[in-house]
Length: 224
Length: 211
Image 1 (spheres, each protein chain N blue to C red):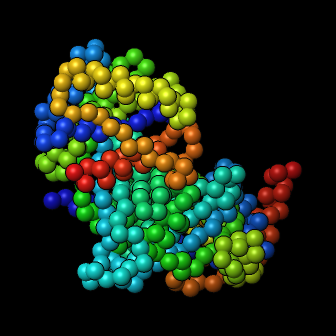
Image 2 (image 1 turned 180 degrees about the vertical axis):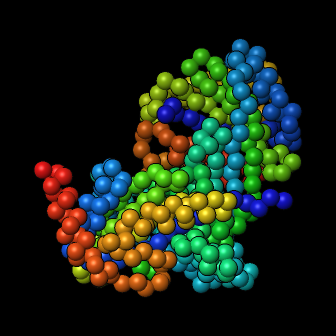
Image 3 (image 1 turned 180 degrees about the horizontal axis):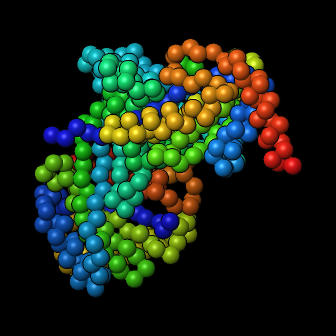
């Protein structure tokens, strides 16, 4: 029997100092040729009840707050590619399935015995670019929410630093293509930040200040 | 979207429910000069929790329903009848639930039938089966010009009366009856939607399984 094609996500991450985010935006706008999309996402991580299911499970609810009507998505992030296959690729390849859902999704999962583990707010922007696959670059400030659902009181987890993620959807059939596209694209961002598989610490780029200064001045001269 | 209602076929006392009832009901509609349009299908699945030990106390619902309509291939609906909750999602949420391994599919009912057009009304007659066993015969009535439940209430009641008369003349042994769900309890508005339809079909599942 032919194995089932699974939805996957290829992803690399990095961090950038907030002072250089403007330069990154200039660079991304130049590379993508489109306007940025604002991001404001309330993310709720839910974990299964103790007595239910064959093994513990977790699922994310993402509520996009950028539009006047919030839109909800159920997101299942599964296991990552392991072993030799994983070592040969420069991005993390993991199972990911998203499904748009009505606004009562939280009530639904609570009824199924899921409990809120923690919630976060991600605020920033994203660019999309079509290469061999559709690449999304998001630059966000990750914020923790001190009181239940009090997103207006969210505070940055790492003040002064923002998270950059370059990702592309793929399948178990074609993830090599997506990884190659992400790697090629990440090269363009290397003057400002290091991108690597999530969990691999790379830190900030020492040459970022010089590169950022140059990008900003060129970006501004282009606009004027 | 246009308002729909769902009617159950109730055979007379002592008469067993057979596939012949479905055939007779279709025949009644065809003899009333309704035009046959297409075959139609819907599926209702009951999910139950995967418990580590039988009969243990758990802090979750004992069951919920997943509903899909052939006319809406990109959508899926879930109904928790105990909590009066209806959820609408993309068609792949069942695949996510399957991977979470908290609930499993316990019972699946297939609604298979024929669609007819009768003036401003669209009629669907379904035989409802669990594997090969017939569990119910139902008729869906859709009034195409209007989407307000309140504005169509009297008209739908009159339409049912008309059909009951026509059916009694053709003498299949039984009658149609309606279980009107309280959509307000599900926080659904007067403007009819696919979520209302999902609630109707979840009622149909409950009724079919009680037969």
